[in-house]
Image (cartoon, rainbow, N blue to C red; front, top):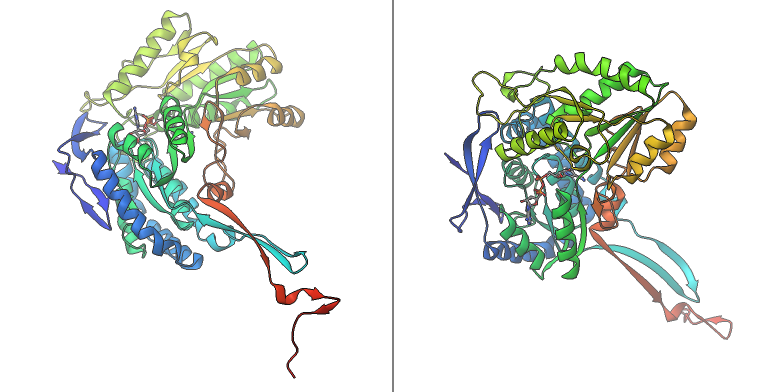
Length: 499
Ligand code: NAD
């Protein structure tokens, strides 16, 4: 069985702890590799080496650092299929989704190619007599990235590309469920010219994370994962004096107004609700039609679309719509939430619990599940399901639909489908959610904007990628400078003219 490694000082190195995590093939349920789980000592050694490498890297001019990103971008394009296959092999998502995962990471690398412009400071000439002021953005030093399983290439790239471009060294702790894609990215970064030690990858679990949070050299922590862990990491990192941004879970609502194009709304709900088996933080998991006629018409359109979905392993071809869940525990959790939905009185329209695929009986598959008549009190509504389950909550008016969305504890993404510009504009202005789609179901902003939720979907002040990432990974220093030779004395310049 393949034994994966850490990535330290420009090389893949074996773990020393003797502890390993199983990496599954989610389609078959078999363990396909094992990943070392680092001790606190291994983490601290990786951080110390990162700190050494960071000094010279910070002194490397931003244009040269950007060239590493240019080379990385080219290498990612050349190795797209290898990276996508590594993502799909461990995550289970389809190959087109695997390529999308890499592509969305690449787009952040592309923004980092403009690092010199993004790091420019401000300048004021003659802020006082002979006084100039200027500000500069300086790297934090060593920073850490802690990432989830569901975008094994994209989110590590969202973290490491801006962090490194700003002149930091990064210690990355990827998900122990999908560790291969980040290791491949590290190999590519070395080929792109990144000095050894600037990116260190330590694989691990809570022990490694806690070592990161308590390490005094680490100045900033960037986390993405579930809300309880985001909150834990945010509070421990902050109480240890670190800068932190921690992005958590989601429950994304899509309001469907009576005047919406219902065929397009149904297509959007199926794509965003079931794509990647619902394992996306921007998946729409709650459909909110306004009025019973809209709700009935939506169900009528959703059912035949759901029945056509092809569920299978990523190896079954490009026409597979979605694959298995990440673990057996995840499959059992999702099935348990569907049971609860039934027990608590929701109408089960399509049931994915008994989904079976010949030859893949031990895989972690759940079929596409649709609930109608879900209410805000039910667990299927309150919890982030993170599976192929769409819940329809009926509302009587636009104001009810808006209130439902606003009362939800999460605030990552939301969407409205309507033909009415006023309603769309009102929704975008009033809703307390970080990313809003208008006739657009998964409104992930392009890489030169920023990505971040509100409420319990994010802890910290700045968003991920785009200009916010350059703020998060740098400190501003402002210099006030006075040169006495330029000051007038008695109305005369102090310069001594050459004679
Ligand atoms: P997770 O919280 O289980 O794990 C995320 C990371 O935290 C992993 O690296 C893991 O090793 C580590 N971790 C897990 N338990 C820990 C503990 N007790 N102490 C310290 N560290 C721990 O999340 P996941 O299951 O890998 O990912 C899915 C979650 O991520 C979903 O909730 C999803 O909504 C969320 N997510 C959010 C965004 C966003 O930008 N808001 C993006 C993608 C995924």
